[in-house]
Image 1 (cartoon, rainbow, N blue to C red):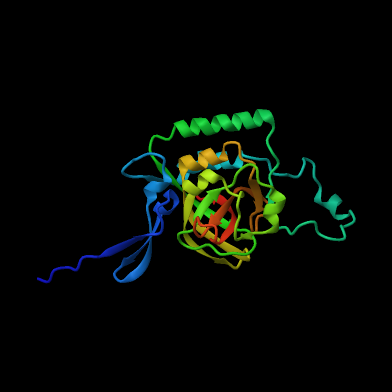
Image 2: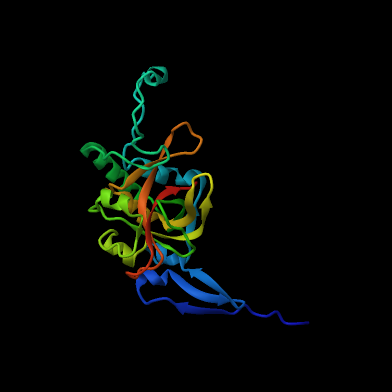
Length: 256
């Protein structure tokens, strides 16, 4: 009987920094491959991780939707009365553009922070969340791109002007370079949205810490939903953690 050939995997570390321990380049059966160390996305030294799916991800979805307030039509809104009003000369923004969520009041912010701490303490096992990314402006999402959390001191006006940054110094949290929020596992172009989008995995505990006190909640209009908006989180996506790496902004939503 012929012996089966063993699959040989050659690893080549990109760098010695903690961020680059998450992504390594290797060869599988003579082909280049991107290898992901999922343990780098969790805070504990557990042997295995779980992926939160279905109804177990609802508390995380509620946490994301509670980080800001999106504008809604007031009660008693009559579309026929609005149609008789004079239309503005120019549109303020396209319907598909993202809008910044209104900040929470002090009372709501304290309640949201308490919910974050409660959910953080209830994590008995290290977990990953499957999320979707929507690229803002130009740029593409590739397998192995790192997802970094934005600091609370960023100027959103400056962020919205340039979606492709070559330096981006001060735009992302300094701690996030050493501990990325997640990693992109698939990417492509969406003809219906007219922009790039992708699928990623993020650490559940890191996402909770990022949502606690964040002011980067963004609302996007769902396609074919009659103007209904969905809450997302603005993040930075980098090709690598070096200063010359391609950097762009994206909106993150949770997939159940």
